[in-house]
Length: 279
Ligand SMILES: Nc1ncnc2c1ncn2[C@@H]1O[C@H](COP(=O)(O)OP(=O)(O)OP(=O)(O)O)[C@@H](O)[C@H]1O
Image (cartoon, rainbow, N blue to C red; front, side, top):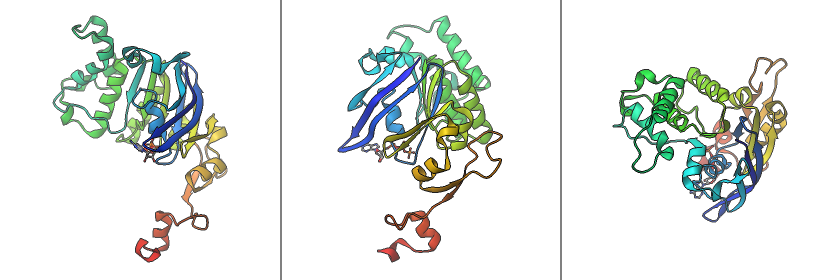
């Protein structure tokens, strides 16, 4: 399913936090969304699962306006793994994953064979089949994250929206999750904080800064020292040979931007100047 964002802007309260973002992810493509804290990644993703309506611009799935679709059709098309998503701790893993079938069921419908099959497949793909009868409240944070991914997959979405999906996961499970996502026959837009994971797994990387899209393209073109240094306000270098085995190859160090504007808290700490001294 092709995803097109066309000049999407979002205003929250009185502040416009996403400005005129246009980008396309082709059917089956995997785009990573990177940017500093507060740059608007989650807000942009929320427009894709109809949690926040754009103030202007359109979101289209295979050419159809997502916000004009019946809600159930939109819910069937888009699977979501949000940051800090809550689950009923008393439910078992299988019951939680089964909730992913809700958009496919009418109010009085019982589970059909295809619903059971979708749940079993999602449990299997995420390595949770052995956990099916465990209560979600008895799982670790990382295991719960996998349950939420399985719930999203159980809906057999055609667009998967992931907001920091590797939160809580150890390094092995971060790689497992992104390998799984990359190999799905699904279009993916994922906010990621790790530039290395974005470079390794995504087909393209979109960079947001203060709500504006500043670059979108293959990682090698986008994750350059100049762009990343400017957007994240860090010193970025690529040592010779770095990146040859995957990842961005970037080595990042904090940068002092004090001459341009009030001293950032981290460089103030490095210089040993306390906030109270600076006032
Ligand atoms: N409900 C809200 N009302 C007003 N402003 C909000 C609201 N939610 C978020 N914001 C602001 O919108 C901006 C973008 O937030 P958003 O969560 O989209 O950023 P982000 O890039 O996902 O950040 P992070 O990397 O920290 O998760 C931030 O400045 C945030 O303070």
